Length: 212
Ligand SMILES: Cc1cc2nc3c(=O)[nH]c(=O)nc-3n(C[C@H](O)[C@H](O)[C@H](O)COP(=O)(O)O)c2cc1C
Image 1 (cartoon, helix red, strand yellow):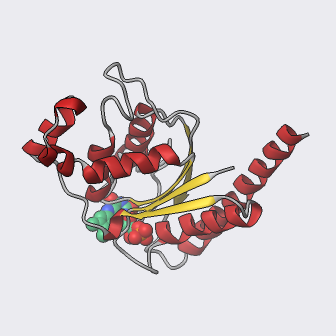
Image 2: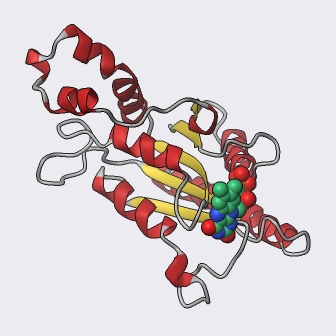
């Protein structure tokens, strides 16, 4: 059974491609697995604070020595980590901004990479046996390996590395590209939808094989 965490990082609503396609993955998944659960975390439209000196102090203070003010400061970070621990299928919708992730997603990462909770001090990721489906959306294209703008793509390497750091090594990317090009965008959206169908079907087969 999957407990899905659907995280969206675009500030845009219905116009957002990463929101739309990641939602379509969740809907397709639920159609195939109706009993599975979904938690939604919309960081694109939520205030995710940047780190402060006090918050960093609270992170590194052993839990038994934390003051009530420090425990209060850690509330959101704890809540976000709890969500990640409770889910086993992450479906992320993340735009490309200036060749990387949106600042809000980086702020989120700074709250959830927690020594002792999501990673050890030896860099051993603690979020084990999780799967991530990462939908990106980009106004342009050519960011793939060997393509003209591959060297500009700081988004995929960052996502791959930081997700692996916390233990999430099973990652599948769905890239929606050319979103600002009326001719090219529909082709990319169609390819993304075909990939969603394949992924959900492949998962069904794996499940049936295990059940046999
Ligand atoms: C601040 C900002 C920076 C952007 N930077 C890039 C970029 O580096 N490369 C690119 O291909 N598109 C870039 N775009 C276009 C977005 O990636 C594109 O609009 C994408 O569809 C946004 O995701 P969304 O549709 O989920 O909101 C940028 C858009 C904005 C608003």
